[in-house]
Length: 246
Image (cartoon, rainbow, N blue to C red; front, side, top):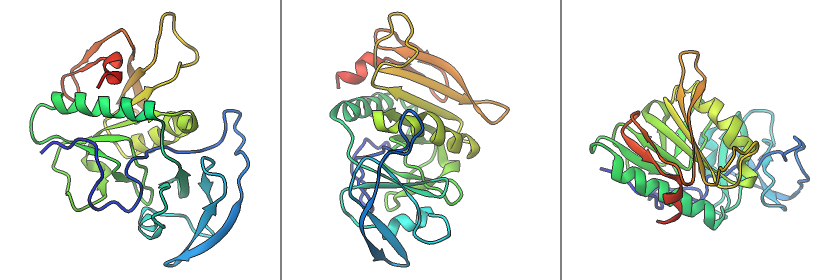
C-alpha cells in the first residue's frame, strides 16, 4: 500500500513540518532564551520565546531520546532528536510544501510495486536519535498505528531544504542516515545553491548513494529544466521543474 503525504493517525507532533533550525550560516547559534519551562512526564520542556532558533539542551544531564518526543506538548511546533539534542522548528514555507508534495506524487507514480511505501512526517529510529525526514520510502509496509520506523526499513530519505534547515539537511542528518545504513539520500534545494553552476535554476535535486566507505556519494545534481532517469533504488525520472507544478 502506497502512502501520500498527510497527517499520520498516531502523530504526537506537527506532521506538516520536517525542518530543523540550527546555527546560522556563520556557525553562530543565534539568540535564544526561555520564557518559562513546564514539566511533561519526567522531562522538563523548554518554552521558546523565539521560534525558528532551535537546539534545546535537555534540562538535566542526560541526552534527549526519541522516546521523549511522546511527552512533549502538542503546541504546533515540530520536534526531533539529533545527536541527543532536541531540535525545535516552526512550520515550513508554501514553496517548501509545494516541492514536497510534488516529489511525493512523482514517487507515488513511480514505485514499482506495492511492497514500497511512502512515509510523510515519520520519525526514523537511529539509536536513541529520531530525525524526521520530509519523506521516506520503505521496502516493506509501514505500520499505520506507529509514528516512527526503524532505520533498517528505510531505503530512501528525502529532505527539502529551507533557509533555516540548511546545516541540518546538508550535514547533520545525512551523517545520521549514512551511519544508520540508509542506502539512498536525496536533497531538494528550493533556493539557488552556492556555488551555482552556469544556467542552474532551482529547485535542484541532489541524489546520493551510500558508498562502500559508509559515506554518501553524489550521483546526480539536477536543476529545473533538466531531467535524469535513475535506475536505483527504482526507476524514477528526476524532473525538478515538475515539482512546482503539482
